Length: 233
Image (cartoon, rainbow, N blue to C red; front, side, top):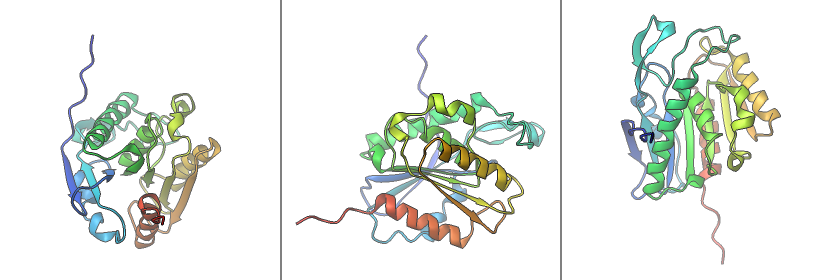
């Protein structure tokens, strides 16, 4: 039986200038939608960078167990908030990763090579960015993972893509995060570093969100990924 390719997710797209050949696919958190991080394009100082297409997909609607089965936008189901149990939703994670892969292929078709594409995400969206990016078969520009963790981490070593063994990872977390504990996010970061990934870890004095110092650090990191090399004479 032939498996049908996933249909493309609805997305919000913002281009910083015409004809971009760089892209950032940015996934929102549980219960939000693609509009959630739309304002970040204006909040980041992108001066001096080539044109970038920001893609903010809307997660599928699905029932979420911890919210009494209420249907909302979610990248996967969450069965428990006890992160020590790690009762994750493999089918949902894998399904969402396939949908993000479809968006990557669309960017390729529009002239953005994998090496000029960043996967980014917050909370659940950050988990999907990590899961997808580290298994993606071609080298990416980087992975930006905010207030999140690595799902299905015990499977990573056997499933990881060799092409992204050295992909730059920016992982950040709030020290007072009341949704995903800081220690749990740091545990994921430590595991990734132990596996040899070049992870840049940041902690901030905040809850489950973003802060201005974090935005400035993200800005710097994006510039390092996308800055054009100096012209040679």
